[in-house]
Image (cartoon, rainbow, N blue to C red; front, side):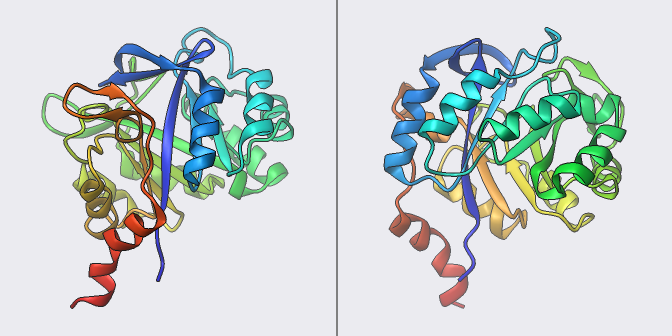
Length: 259
């Protein structure tokens, strides 16, 4: 039985972990290395770390922090935030990251995707799309941590970056970020249906059934979430969590064994 990867997304601001709602009001939730240790114990499939202020501040995610994460993490992990050139990508991969995640620079300098994919392999190059609906209800991609509109349709943009050599896409709904009300299944499926590379759903997951929906309805190849794995209960107490293998098997087994 094929099971999707389930990926906690951890947001960095400075040296601390934060969580946002619709990319706003970052709330401090703890130390990133401590979170890695907990996810090790919980046997997470993969982790993603994103420095949410790097692009706007003209810097990129800390190589030293990535090294620290690499020293602790038992699972593969990807990193993003302000990555804008080949040298930075090389440093981050050497520091222990399996993948680099590019957002703003993928739009501003598309040749970076093509060049880096040729040097490091497409499997190491992930493009992240932050997507919002405009006033007319149409999807548009945004850059610089959701602060600058591009007016680019995410389907066309996804096809473009695939052609340039991206090996994976992360589709993040800004409108649903941190709301825990469920993924934008229409958005996810529209991207999956138009590309041939893996698509990671992100933005809005609040329970395990939302993960199942993104896989079975949205056809996502992997399921990423932040709040789901950080918070517990209606008051959103900080409690790092991750489903057990038995919970994951039970979550998806109905589709495969009970027609």
